[in-house]
Length: 233
Image 1 (cartoon, rainbow, N blue to C red):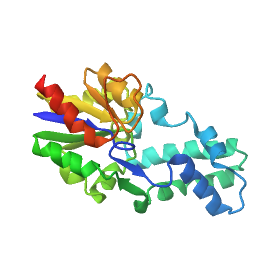
Image 2 (cartoon, helix red, strand yellow):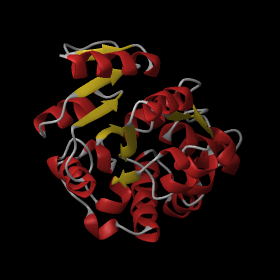
Image 3 (cartoon, rainbow, N blue to C red):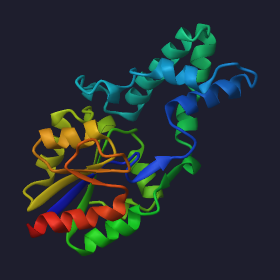
Image 4 (cartoon, one colour):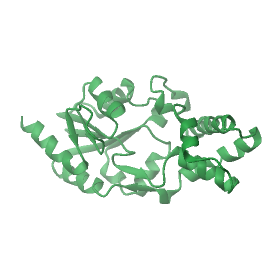
């Protein structure tokens, strides 16, 4: 069997309108349309607080959606407090973020995602997602038509291990079992590429300028050629 571990955000799909900072600012402005808070101020305050920005700290105790979101809302509430929001308002705004972030209309696949996966499937490759993501990632990929093309999904919100933590890759590899070839494809040179290579897996960097990585292509359309070339060697 030949298999590929695909990152999700920034690789297979994206959230239109921005990520956490944009969602938090949307919640702030829904509460107060005249708030002077800026996106740059929110981004600066949120930097470094999320689980995936501290991959050396596993969080398996947050393996249920309720626990994961409770921890996330607490982080956002604390950030708002640091931005000068009184406690009651900080809580009121923070609890609105999950619904905003999960808005189904915001989630999309890149145009080259399904054609590339289908081409590789026809060549005998199986597809798995390995992502630092929300508990609802399975629902997102199902709604976007990606789920039938996947043989499995490994999500940090379920396992408690964020890439590039070696256990994130180990869990995926152990579950998949023996393979003729197992690759990682992602847009993050640290979490996806360096993490995979440290775990003994070759990796392709996509949609990101090359950073000294061995394998790189501008988009997913270049992935099949790289895989074919390496198998032919």
